[in-house]
Image (cartoon, rainbow, N blue to C red):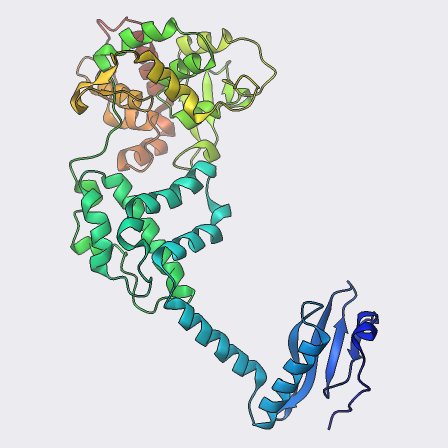
Length: 419
């Protein structure tokens, strides 16, 4: 039988500071454990079957002396019944999780998954987009459903309305739903198979994303009107105007432009090296700079900021800066519109499509893989091959120079590129 120490009072326990196990009495084998760091917790030392066990009963003072004695007494009652308190506690926790699973909705699971992985996102925009895409497209259909009960048919209700018209978005939503269900399964909230997996499930019911002809495009200006737009843009002052001009001439994304810093740009070799962390595809990207771009950069006003196109306070330009400029250029009556999309006002990202259409034109004649590489579309087979050929930088340099000349209104008589 374990020795029963003289019961200590709450004030006496509060004063215990000897490192190690301090008996507190009241229940045989109950100790207050003090670590070298000063942390304190309750331990019940007892023999379970033929083994001596140190059973944790919680930290002090979160668990009071009176409560520790209650828990210790309960544990000894279980031991006398031939039960292991630790195993019984694990069973109770598992039963609680199973009960909670009945009330875990898809929306709750999505937010829990999002929180668990919050530090793995590329940036704050990617982090916000991850959950907002599910809020927009999935929550209305299955957000309030218990995650354990959602079926393949429920997932289809989410995806089918957007699969053909917004395939890229729908694909991301499916992938994110799959990750939520995977989290739910490994966390004990779902026992059935993942209903959002592609192979062996949705692949048999939905068209392959790459084979869907209709894709979502940003409203873009016809490439034939780009010189006209560039002339109007040249009349505008400010960092946003020069950033947009730079973006059009380099066929870059808004985020890459706004995050551009002077240490990324080599005016001697005339190359802008965008680090992997700033790229959508997560791979470093080199952009040859035409003489027009170099002249634009050299003409920028002096600034103490390392950002090439800083905000008025010297910080990174807001993601609304360039978009707001284009909207202002379309007031009071929209003149810069996409006729292929019912005259929707253009957006900055659309100029990448304008560039692609220009590069495809018979008068220009660059191979598709060259323009794909310029756009950093690194998921295509052609572009992977291009990377193996040293990024085709000399040919891309010639293409970007011809693009700059075209944007300046010198598009007539452009020579056909020879690869």
